[in-house]
Image (cartoon, rainbow, N blue to C red; front, top):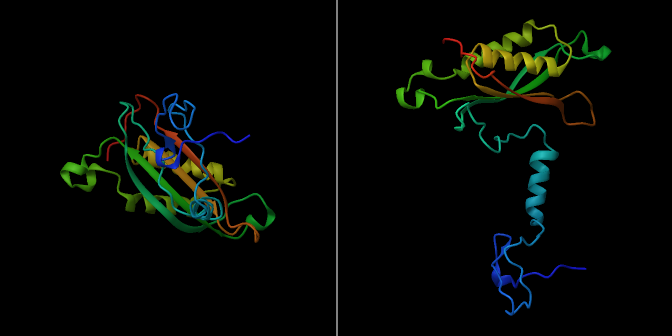
Length: 196
């Protein structure tokens, strides 16, 4: 059975205008949402950018909140590429393979917004160098452990309050575009940020 819908002239942004009993629909729909399918081009775009292309760059849906409940400012690196030895399969144990890394670091309202000084924020150039050094020096096998190391660096060495790290193996399987892991971590409440 198909649910009755408000006349098209009453539907705005997927929600019908309130209808009173005895009007042209003969029903009181109140303010209940009318379920509508998204346009085909929207479905195709969503499929293309999020499901079929895991390397697609998407900003976080909502900014993470700081300890005071205020949104954090985000400093980010997307698509950092490097080569490293990582994995548990025989073919991964002795030869490097590419990784692609995204890092979103949250800081309370960055003082750099007012001072225009790099010392008052996270220097993404230094984060990049530090992560590339980690790629050269680590002895980890799992992407989860590698992502955790990146998160520890951003929180502990660079003073972020919150971090999201995504690590992708873009060439792990011939029939899969990419595999990977994404984690989020937050500095413990009351833990002081390192001095920069």
